Amino acid sequence: SHNELIQNELLKNVDDTKKMDDIVNKLQKVKQLQESLQELQDRQMEIISKSVRDVVSMFPTLHALCVGPGLGRHPLVFKVVQQVLQRGMESNLTLILDADVLFMLSLEEYRDLYEELLKYERCIMTPNVMEMKRLPSPSSFV
Image (tube, rainbow, N blue to C red):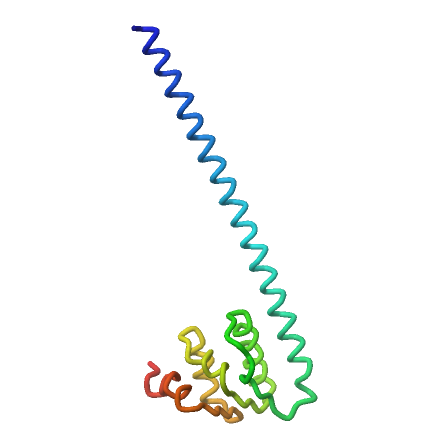
C-alpha cells in the first residue's frame, strides 16, 4: 500500500508534467502567432506608407483630387485614403469626395476626419440619397 501511494504520486507527477508540456507548447504557439501578427501589422504599415507617398507625390501635378468611385471598402485602403485626405488638406488641394469614401466617412473611426473635411473650404462632397442618410449630420457632433 505504501508502494501503491508512491506509484500513484509518480503517475500523478508524470501526468502533471505532460500537462505542463502541453501548456508550454501552447504558449510557444501563442508567442509565434503574436510575432506573425506583429510582422503582418508592420508590413501593412509599410504598404500604407508607400501608398500614401505614391499618391502624395502626384499632388503638384493636380488641380483637384477626386476620391471615392471604385475605391472599394477594404480597411487598409481606408487607412491610405485617410492619410491622403489629411495630406491633401495640408497641401490646400481641392478634394472631391464621392461613393465609397463617403461610406468610409460615415464610420465612427473616421468621424474626426469627416468633421475636418466639413470645415475644409476646398472640399466638395457629392453624396446620393443613401450616402447622405449614412453620413452624420454636423449637428450630431459633440
